[in-house]
Image (cartoon, rainbow, N blue to C red; front, side, top):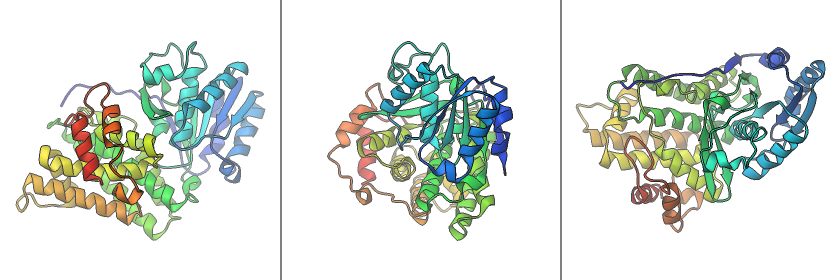
Amino acid sequence: MIGFEYYNPAKIVFGEDSEKKLKGLLENYKVTNLLLVYSGDFIKSLGIYQVIKEAVKELEAGFYENGSVVPNPSIELVRELVDQGRKNKVDFVLAVGGGSSIDTAKAVALGIPYDGDVWDFFEKGVSPKEVLPIGVIATTASSGSETSNAAILSNGEWKLGFEDDRIIPGFAIMNPRFTVNLPAYQTFAGIADVLSHLLERYFSDERYSDTTDYLIEGAVRALMVNADRLLKDPRDVNARGEIQWLASVAHNNFLDAGRRADWGSHRIEHELSAQYGLTHGEGMAVVMVAWTKYMAEKKPWRPALLASRVFGVDAYDHSEKERAYILSEKLSDFFKKLGLKTTLAELGIDDRDFETMAKRATKNGPVGHYEPLDDKAIREILTLAS
């Protein structure tokens, strides 16, 4: 078990009517001008917009908004919002929605007090001197960005991340009822996203981190149990609450304790979604199935362990390699049950861009920590995903 530091200042306000506590949360920040970032009018039909407007009015703060966020958020909108924020002396950024809105808000909070171009944080790894406070009202269960220290942005063919504890939101409001009317595809792609965050952390080369191992295995089991409940009853608010909380648990860095997570699969998927505009969760389903096949031949011990402990694959009857292959099959079956595609062919993607994506992913060297992947390895995984 390796040494670690854990820090997460996000205040979680979870449950029915939790959004009604917004005014009190904002009072703690002495907000004078608030920028609301979201994606579409759904926040009005859910009643969230009115709650925000009333809270801001009672605080006698300025109110500015933009509802133009799209999946795989782009640097162009962030730059526009940074300009708007500077002009209006915004001192608090509130995101409503899922990962795209939250990551946009994080980037805007970085960019407003910064003298240069906000893309510098993502491309050059510039360390911020100041970050505006951020709050979140989560309406999906997927990215876990509401309590994470990471943001992902797209800029043309590049999709890059930035990590810093100062972009962890100060609070995250989670009312599971806001997720009840999500389309089935968005719900189940979100579950695949949550699972991918758990698996990236599980696939560590650290052999002595039993506490975190068992926590992740339990979270994977809980996720699958509640996914089955939603397949039976999409309006099961208890199942949706479990999954919304798991989304945060999977990505608030607590499950990094004592180990180094992999993240190679995410780097591959970021190339796919940058190149083809895939939904991240479905892209991760495709990559994780192929990655586990690749590791069955290269380094099977971690996938084999998960196969035995979560799926009950007997170590006496199957070798490590066999158990790793079985894990790939189990994951594929789970994603298919959720109605997600598990191959690139199903997504209409052939091999013409494999080399380009592999070179781009490894521009700064191999990716992933469990088994570092060079461009040749990434091409192999993409071929396995075909």
